[in-house]
Amino acid sequence: MTNLKPILVIATMFLAVVMLWQVASITGFLTNETIPANVTIGNEVPTVNTIHCSTSGDADGTLTPVACTNVTAQCWAFVTDENGANDISYVEGSLGEFETGKLCGFPDFTTMLVAKQIYVSNCTSYTDVNATTRNYTCTFNGFRHWTGLDYRACEWTGKMRASDTTTTGSITESANNLTTTNITALDMIETFLGFGSMTLGETTSNDSEVNSTIQNCGNSDIDLNVSGTNLPCNTQGTIPVGSLHYNNETFGTDYDSDTALLTESIKFRNALSTANDDRGINGSTHIGWDEIYWQISIPTTGVKGLCTGNITFYATANQV
Image (tube, rainbow, N blue to C red; front, side):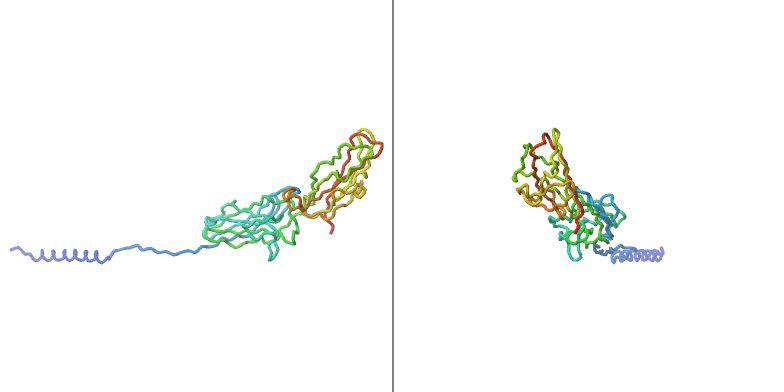
């Protein structure tokens, strides 16, 4: 008779192992398992570091207007966003005359007013410094010759602010007031005075005065001075310099009531202010422009032909 006891014991052990494995499978007892972990990082507002400003080619902190024209100015600064520089959505800058507690002529970065002293730029030019910082440059193309030194007792300052995808940062100002170079200049709009054909002894009538126009082409108030020469004629004789009369107040005055031109320089206008536009933009009203009205009286004898002389205008810094 075969001994079945060992076989029965082995079968019983195998059954127990199978049952244990089944229990483990049912209850989830594994050797390893992965579960998620997360945290939410809040947004960091971008910050603008020290601002530097200058006109093109000038040292940092120096603004130099150019007489009678535009010049390009720039402000630049490192902008940092600790969430990553790619998070910066835009940077904007303002260059203008500010006063503590008062913004001179420009209330914010988004509303443009007709003000000669304020320039605003969207600063799209940048270079990457590292993962969190970019060097942004704001370019102001309309920096005009009339940019003044002390307009409304304000000081020149550069301002920038940065925004990211969700938040606009605070405004950062340049650390020091910028130095604006003083320029004294004028521009004559008419290139010559032409009185046409006249006869001996004739004087221009008060309704046929010839005008000349002067623009203050600098950035500070100027005094206007004028001198002239005799008018030698190409056929015979010379018209004396004093035969030319002028005034800068009213068109249509009598010849004898106007001022005679002299060979020495005479001041005829005090404190012509800086301009507020280019001639023609604001119709007939201009700041920084002056009209001079001219008449001439021809001698009764001794002159003939084309008579030509020179009139010289001088701009000097206003003497308060």
